[in-house]
Length: 624
Ligand code: ADP
Ligand code: MG
Image 1 (spheres, rainbow, N blue to C red):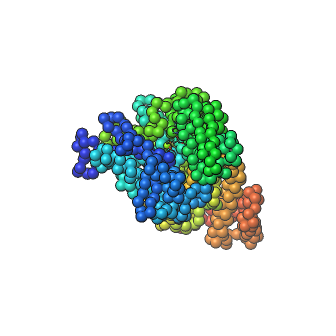
Image 2: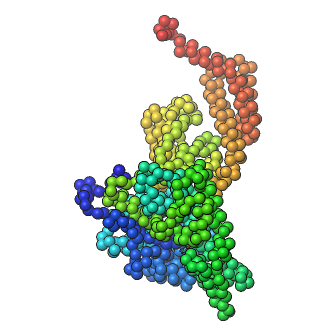
Image 3: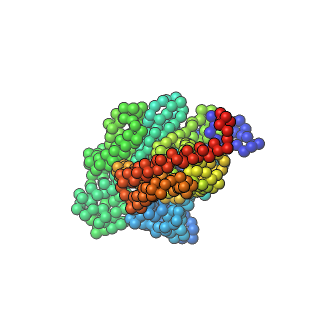
């Protein structure tokens, strides 16, 4: 099944014409571009034969720039203008970046996304990413000898709307046609050919430079489904480097890494990283640091020492793995395999820990640096129409629940967290007041029961609801999330067909740390939330009863004796009082029950009266 037809009408591609398509791993630390040639995916090297492009851009006075290796070498000299790990800022506001103060950049807070003030002027993370993507596009077009028809760019599975949209915007700015954003773990699974006939559930363990991601994928009959995602956006190879550097300082009584001058800090971190990487293929590695006072400090790092330093970090990755499996409602025994992704999974101690935790020999024969780009290239090739007719249908999940605000500031979840994408879910709502002709729709994201604790995504109003009694209109609200994870919401009144629609243009800026925080808060607060929900529901019910009684009195008060009317008025007053004073659930409910009781005979009289009105003037025998 072809997922996307990119041929223009009347210009259908000749049967054997190969469309140039590429897969791009736009990584925090490194980026790569790969393509399929002769049914084989391979990463494309730069003119010096290097595959990895450091995701680093240095801006120069006058508007020029340096990129990749060249820029990374200058990082220590010109930290303010040399942007590293820009992926962390994509779709983020300053408030979303708690560690921003520790970074050497001049952040400019924007309404949508942070900007970075450089010597060449302000740059947004989208522009910086676009510069990286442009370098990769030029590399591919030079090597392949023609323009790219389309690309697949990978993103972490936990990326929210804003981060995905920012990635797409960067691609557009770089002159790329994005066929699809693809989750990184899914790309890795494709690279391993797990789609080729195999059935089963796989964990993808991705430990990169600054992030850890775990994803649980289910594959059956060529369909990928992401069952759960998790991870830690502030945990990666860099933390091993820091742990090694701190240990080194301890060995030499240097009073901790932060006590060193900035240049020495950077030099020591680079040493630590070099030693750590060397230790992946050597029994021992040496570190040396020249101190500003001319002293030279040295140390030898052994696997046992690295294991001790890395143990707490690895334990954190395994805790995230347990959470993801729990979200997927699976145990380690349900997995058919584990795939290793990311440069840090080269460390033997990481491999060993994963093997023990999952009880599986991890899949690691494909270079963990390249595996994501290779999978993206295979997917791009299929989407560009070069496929062998067995293209995959890819399904991912949404990281946070999406819902609507309902009466009382409560959230009605429409698409629960971890729902497979693309997804469309509809729910019916009704009007709350008699004669209500418009309904405000407020779309929110999060796990909590109360709107105030969730993130507001969009608001729109459905007008033109035919005036009717409260509860008579039927309004169907449909949430749709496409394969790239972008949301649109529509509301339709079913009797008249009036419709309103909104594309949820993400307001840039929800950190995955915030996602994790919101999830945690939801778990911790579920007890309090339950009580709040009960109170709000009781309040909504009470208010509805009050309104209904009021409108009944307006019509039919004449049916009541003065004593009956006084009793009802008194019960109404008690309900209104309970609402106004924010009384506890039990009191609100008691007042409502009393009002229901007080109006019981009134309701019966009204019903009789209305039957009599209906019958008036009609002969009994005309009633069938
Ligand atoms: P990202 O996905 O964040 O761009 P990568 O997958 O490129 O990151 O991983 C970069 C990390 O991998 C760095 O921390 C680097 O030190 C680490 N790394 C690379 N090679 C090795 C190795 N041989 N042994 C240990 N760590 C390594
Ligand atoms: Mg990566």
